[in-house]
Length: 65
Image (cartoon, rainbow, N blue to C red; front, side, top):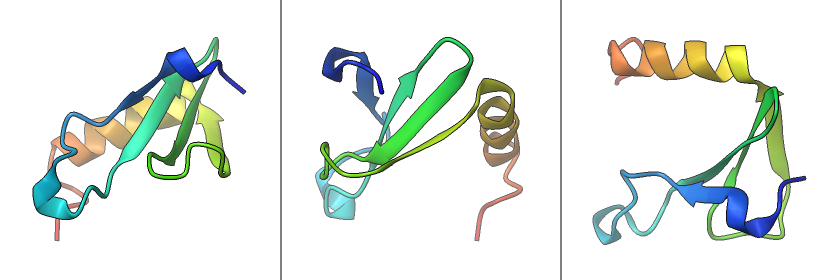
């Protein structure tokens, strides 16, 4: 997996949501996603194209409740 310095926290992370957020690491052709509170825990790894599609759909509001 990526070096610890390659991970970054979501810009939406704040204390108002109890610190709940994700950390992301952009690898060569994949993206790692993990719980930012469990840095040594498991990470989901997905192709960069799938992550980009997911982010695009989130921004359009498709996944809002």
